[in-house]
Image 1 (cartoon, rainbow, N blue to C red):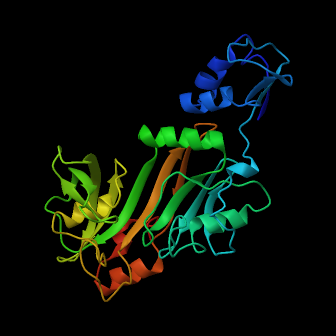
Image 2: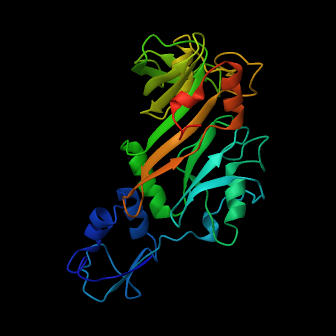
Image 3: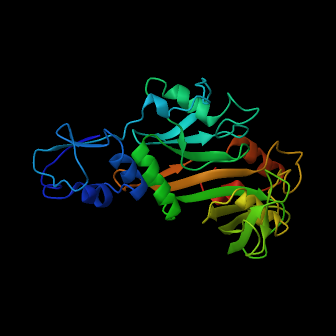
Length: 309
């Protein structure tokens, strides 16, 4: 990244520009400081205490290098809908039955494989901002550069990335709109399952989910769920623990004859752009299998709004 110093940065120390103006994290600035080519002015290495002058060219080593690329992510030409894309961020509409990243048994069929193929004309490092379970569909964000990855991570930790999910649950919540709060940790002797637990239980972390019931048929409901924390399986556990598991969730509820996976879809994500701070909204309408499930259960999705369906 090369920056021509003009009125906006003239007279400032580099560390001030990196931290306050560019919004780089402390950790990222440390990486730049200790990299031989991390921070240069007019082609010469400088410290972050250098005072910038008009006409200087500030060079920052934010580009990925071949050594940064994981050898375990093989480019594969897979169908994957991109719903937002620029130099810094890519948002995809992940289909169900596609893992986010490679694992045992899933080395060539993931979002990471698909994006590595899409960007095979450059040095590409897969940096997911949020991960979705294999059978959860919808909006998933990835950062395309080192600096955008740090900024998106910070935005996530600060609660500035807002995510909304559509779920069909088996039951009716006692309140039409509320906030679910608990603590969660990994279930003993399981590497997959999580559960609610006491605050002082080993590994306990707070989990908070806002929800609103959009419609119901007296037996099942369509809910809009917005996780305020990012615990594994959070939405699934929160509803299951209250007697309303997500339809088709074989891990925390039961299978359904109407759908081959749990009926959970990442519908809407709003995030600040890592470079401009502009608020970006990406939407992924409900996929056909959840639409068909709703029809089978006599749930009218049209009352949920035109953007959802």
